[in-house]
Length: 277
Length: 267
Image (cartoon, rainbow over all chains, first blue to last red):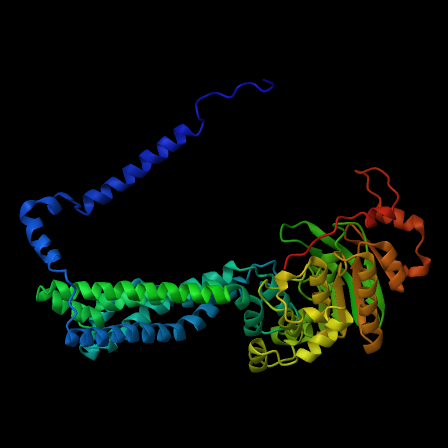
């Protein structure tokens, strides 16, 4: 042995133990505050109705008129998610361009730090994006159901507003996370900001933007289902009706449809990423 | 007069001085090589001349205008008349060579035209023509991340050739190329400058290349101009003084620049 033997005790053991204890200490109030009690699940009186509800799931409903209804509700859900996301993109893209520091002209000659005045102008846009996404879509949906009446319109508007906030924030951060060199070189050669974005930032950011957008589309499908419960149309509204009538088979068919939709979104994402990322 | 610098200094963000009191005048159509040891301030000087950096002190005149007295929009227009070849051309990895070259003229193109060209290259013939001069025409539709460091440097040169600026600035434009290719690429730059009456300033590590291809040599050391004279009048003693390094001991000056590690640029 040329080197002195290292002590057998792992020097990282104590910090790890402390970290675990801190994590437990932080998690415990969360469990007790949310009144989580797994016991109710196994209580005989509760398990019985739950079991009978679940046992009605088999076989999934497949009557012809129900399937026609299911198809229509599914198309409506897809339409709500797609239309909502398209509207959100209309707001999110310009907002992300305004909020992002990636296209700062003043940063070119200041070692990458934008002028404080230019930064101050970005703040109102950031604040707008925060307001848009801080209110959950279900709350917007309740609001719009009152304004626009029962039906898909409320769902589309609710998704458009919330998702504009989320997409705008994430796009702006994606723009800032790519290598700023290409865009700065173009700005330094006389290009305008939008040109520098198209030729310097977009080629690097497109893959990530695409994948995040498809993921958000998947989320929009789920959100539109949840909003259906408050009357905003689509599969959710049908599911609410079936649950109230304890039609377990119908619920099972709808859950299988969800599975297929999420699978579809996943395939689409993989296809697009394989092509463009 | 293409360039007029009087008492120009520059300090980095950290506060340390990079250039002191630079006086330099370059007439239209001149070809000037900037040589000096690593860290002498050659890149900073070129970025200052490209109006990417704002001098801390002194007077800078570029193509007859004072860039930092212009409003931002006019300064962008002026920047469009100056082309800078980067040592490691900052090109997006997934961008195709044709798009990277055509991006040279963004300063002259309208937004709709540039967006259209992003989808379908509007002047592929023009891009192929400048690439052909650098023997890269077969790479027209390849992606930038499929090219070697030296090929990327040539794409960077092709972009500036396509831009056709009145002032060509080149920061170590051939550092990742083999000697034959380096000489050829410098000749293409010099030829372009001669043909269009453009001014050319290039920083170079290799002293032999500078002396062979440029009529005027500017030696920079520690952020100051050490000498500024015709290539034929540069004496070995001056080169020795330019590259002398107390820490590394005395070495034959001519071999120091030639032995430099080749930088492979990022895509």
